[in-house]
Length: 243
Image (cartoon, rainbow, N blue to C red; front, side, top):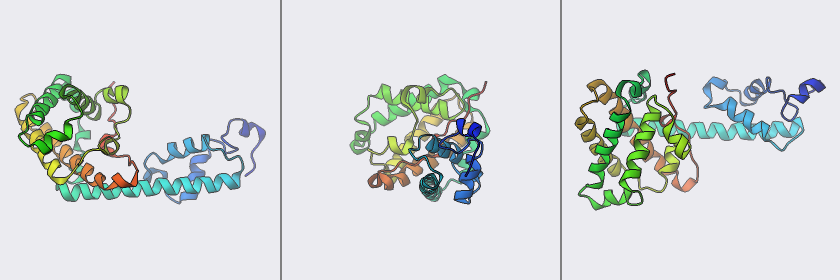
C-alpha cells in the first residue's frame, strides 16, 4: 500500500483512518454491520499497534479480527443457551429497548424495586443463597442494582460513571451462578416486581423477560470461568438516555 505524505500524516501506521474499516472488512470477509463494535475495535487496535509495515500489520489485523470473531461466536452461543434454558425468545428479552422504561417509571421506582428485592434476598431462609451475597452490604447491593437498571433501561449511565463497564459475566465470575441460584434470584425478583405498585403490567412483563434471559445468560457464562475470558453482551449495553 502506497499513500501520499499528506495521507500518512493523518494515518495510523501508514493506513489512512478513512480506509481502514474497508481494509478490515476485506481481511475478515464479513460485513462490519455483522460485527459487535468491530470497526471501533479494529481502529483502536491499529492506533495502538506497534507494527509499522503493511505486511506485518496485515498479519496483526488478521489475528485480531479472528479473535474478535471467536468472541462474537462465543457470545452468540451463550445467547442461544440463555434462550433455551430461560424459555425466553431474544426478541422478548430485549423488548425493554422498545420503550424508555426509565422515563416511564422514574428513578424512585427502580430504587424501590431493588430495595424490595434485596430485602428478600438478605432475609432468604436458605443459607446457601444468602452466602452468595455475603461479601457485599445490602446498601451497596441495592445501589449497584438500581444504578445498572436505570442505565440499561434508558436513564443516565449511573453505574458506569461510578463502577465502569457493567461487564456482567466478568463481574459475576466469582459467584456460583447455577440454575438453582438463578431460579431463586428470579423468584425474589418476581415477588419484588409484584410488590412495587408503580410498575404497570406491560413493563413488568418486559422486565421479567429481560431478567429471566439475563439470569440464564450468566448461568451459561459460568462455563467460561476457567477460560479466563470475558464476553461482551447486549444485556449490559447501555440504552441511550433521552435528551
